[in-house]
Image 1 (tube, rainbow, N blue to C red):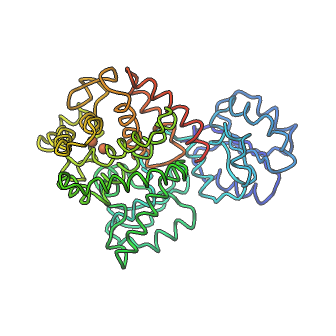
Image 2: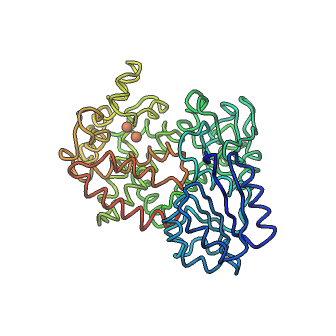
Image 3: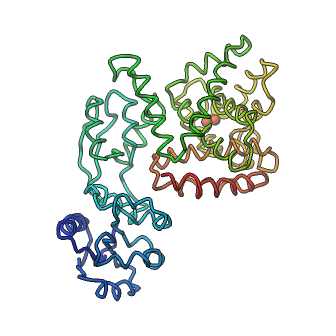
Length: 445
Ligand SMILES: [Fe+2]
Ligand SMILES: [Fe+2]
């Protein structure tokens, strides 16, 4: 929330743009003085003030303030999250703005975009409202609770009631307005929204034909991966490998595993397994492990690792950490703690199954030591690099669910993983991941 004495300086010369920004700024609670500066000379002394309660919106598209462009990065260094630059839409991805991307908005922004940007910059914590990516609502046929759209800090408008039917046209209407998340109240998020993360990519009943459903769910998963900055080349490579994993599963010895794999298609297990495979590939690229053999082992491990869990909905709890899992209902906690071992045993039935794949499945919740890891409580010094790559990619995907796939918070997801995995073989992997994030993922989101 904006502090009570937040004073705003607007450096915008175009009248209609100024009106648009002013009306949004004024919609925020707790804004004090709103001041318009008429030129560069008037703006500079304001920027030199060190008052933390100053907030700036500066229009770099107008000639009056274009000279500020050269100083943009320094201004962000001084004022951090208290400054927004308006730039030409086609220049948003320019290299000169890459370091201050979070502070930049295109000139043709929608009202809601600026509101969201301000709220993202200003209120990182303490919100009572949770964003859920709009595509996740294809997973259910009725809204699990009251649904809101965000209009500004603490401003939400209800657009659907609990139990209202979901339909494609309704979602498309909001997508057309560039709404990418719906909001729910925090208590509803925890109590009623599990299906939005653990169920199918799209509910078959929402569509007239099965073909339409399959097309839609592939479109959603593909879109998610692209939104996360995974390039087309990796997506197509991974899809090829996935096809060969499915072929592998035709072996009579793997009949049981095949049945489980088929059953989990369209569930949380499939979604997060597919995403894990993508991020394994990105990490491999930055570790200089480009062999098809490695890719194939990680693909198998990705698609098999949670098949030991009988109910896909339970997989939602797998990343909670051992200390929390052991406090859950005993049956549930036992199933979670055992799922790696169960699938590892099933895979042993195939004599040609690489031991590394079996070990990854067995160890995919290891790495944090006896307090938090299961089943054995190992650290990075007892795990191979390949196992560590998988663990990091998998945990990062679980973190992405926590930030509701909001790409502007991707650093937060990375930081959460980096903070946890610091021992032994994790060190080299996290270094590679940092490079991947800066050089590959961030520039493309
Ligand atoms: Fe798992
Ligand atoms: Fe998993």
